[in-house]
Each structure stands twice: as structure tokens, then as C-alpha cells.
Image (cartoon, rainbow, N blue to C red; front, side, top):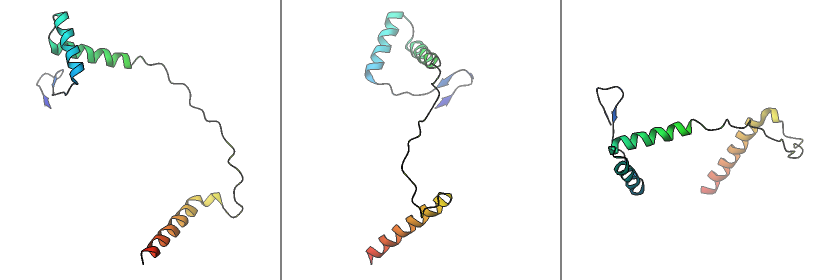
Length: 98
């Protein structure tokens, strides 16, 4: 990527799909504008259009009942329980390799 002295210009190489390149060249030919101008105008139009997206809807989740918690499982120590289960599985796998 080459940055020119002019702060408003960035010289770079793009790989454009053949179908898009043909459409851009045809548009440049029809409009009588340079290919570079057509590419810049098309990119600007796309970026401008993407800024006009509707506001996202508020995110909401409906809670689902997943059943009762096991009596011997203290959820205040859920990470410790997950660590213990992982350790037990590692030990089991190591013992299988012996």
C-alpha cells in the first residue's frame, strides 16, 4: 500500500472480481468518466448507503425453564465444578494412554 503526499489520496492495489470490473468499466465508458472516478464514486455510494441502515431493534431474550438444579450442585461454585469435571476427564484420558 502506498500513501501519497496528498492526505486525501491512498494508492493501493485491489483485486476486483471480473464481473464487477466489467460492470465498472462499462459504467465508466457510458458516463465518459475515468475508471478511477467510477470506482471511487461507487465505493462512496456504497458506504453512504450502509450508513442509512435502520436502527436495530432492541435485543430481548425470553427466559426458558431448564429444570431443577441438582441438590448436590452449588451454582455459586460453578466454575470450580467445571474445573473439577475437566480435570477428571483429563485424568481419564491420560489413564487410557497407559
